[in-house]
Image 1 (cartoon, helix red, strand yellow):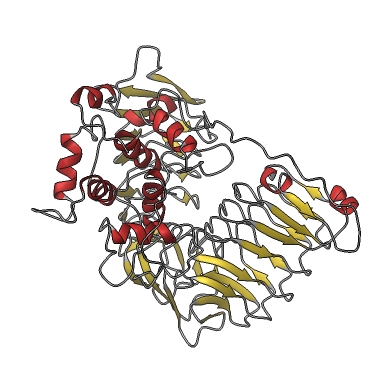
Image 2 (cartoon, helix red, strand yellow; image 1 turned 90 degrees about the vertical axis):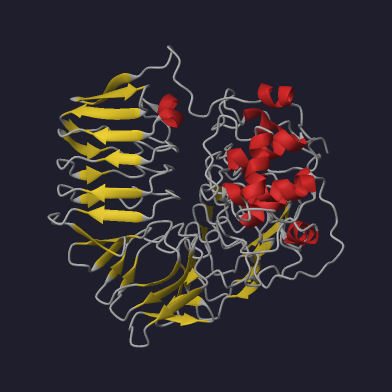
Length: 562
């Protein structure tokens, strides 16, 4: 391991995150039939002017995309009536938005991946898309104009006007939350990605819970009113009242999980992002597994799909990066797109049918990890698939979302080609440099960067680190032994806790220097000063308590360990 100590070397890697656009980059243009946009280099303000609807954009296609990192503030002019889909997606340094009273609608993912901490919904807004504020990790306050006839706010949570629909809980909501009595519908994506929310109470009035409502949260305990006729909690898992539908699995469920016999449906996103689960037993009573149900379960090593399943849904096992084997019944007639995308460890597929049946199976796009695995056919003597020649490790030189000029580009290349591998992205050819990193992932990246040393002990001291087969298990044990981390103070490591800059730089500082605690100020003070001394923060806008994205995590590791 080599340290970058030379000021000369450090300066050679320094550049500015909030780069002033070059002359070649447009700073004005058209964004609707009668709308124009103008960016001010002096203030970092993007202003939308004119009349009518802003056009809808696809991911990463807004006309100001090249300016995303430089945009700090957005002003929506008085004549604008609609904010388009994905309009300001990826403006990760944007902290302020002014929406005029004439805006009627806010589109899907309009403010995705921004740094908004507070938002004011003016009187004119009547429609807010489910994921308008998706992945806004710093959002803690939502305000609504009193005269708005469509929306209201209680305790910084967004509701419809009469309070019967809970629309959106901001990502920074933490601790416990009690849904107010009178709420009938918990909206689509309402609590999605609320990583710091640990405890949720559902009143008797709730009759419907929308898709993705509790996806990828930190909820460790659900509570449902005893007189709720529609939902119940059994051993930390939310079901419908009859027990036929598994709605959402809390983060208290770790290691092995057995779905009760009698469950017929696993809801979409039910286990989404639960990295603690390493195996799941699905009974034959289950006849439907919803899309994304197990997506992002990075600790899941194998799964047996029961004979009752005929369709493997969209994205259902995507990014289960530790999955080594899957058993598929011959009743399956279709495997939808992205069902196994990002399953980079998948080596063996056990298929109950014949080679001819496999050939006739409708396998949609983005399932290469499944297709390229070794297929084991039934044991009745049918022909086996030929053993594929082992492929040499590919030099991962590019990701579709990593610009070669980005300050973290070389660091991403290093991490994807490091021996042992530090990270190979999130699947679909993407690295997701602005993506959220949790504490389990961060210490695993660090552990891999130093060569995956074996910990001296095999027993974890943390109550939430219990599965020796989990991808992060040895990394957490090693980090604890080296006093790089001692958890969060309640006997847990908090695997899914959102990684802040303070956490990441403290982990790195302790690993490099051997120090175990800051000698002054807060627990991160000395680490932050150390980072500044070695110019790790050069050109970056770092907030010790702000979330540290994937691009910056590998950038810091590369600067000190490449």
